[in-house]
Length: 133
Image 1 (cartoon, rainbow, N blue to C red):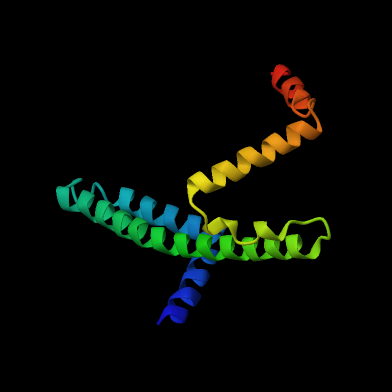
Image 2 (cartoon, rainbow, N blue to C red; image 1 turned 90 degrees about the vertical axis):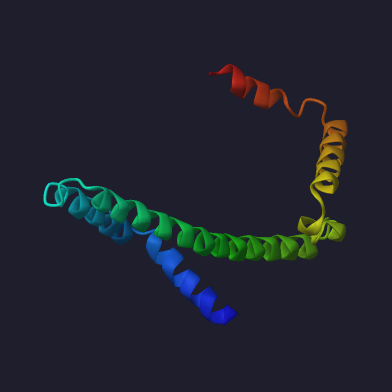
């Protein structure tokens, strides 16, 4: 069942991000709007679009989250492979995405501190970019 969902989610997420999906959604909304006078803009007429869009939105959240989870896992695997392949890479960074937020913040702070120690002018270029606004 899980593999079937993954395949379905991948197919739908891939299609939903393309222009034909937008055109279809736009045409549904246009058709609904054009039928307003026919149904005298009734509560039922409004309920149809509200219910339809709510259901589609609710289901798309799960499909999009599945696609993002897969993409994030693939990116992590690629980054881990790069770290492993580099002679100067620190293998202890492989898998840090499983750490808590506090642990990740501590690692980031330590890395930033190490970077500044090596080059105290590191952020001067960023400052110049900000001043250009």
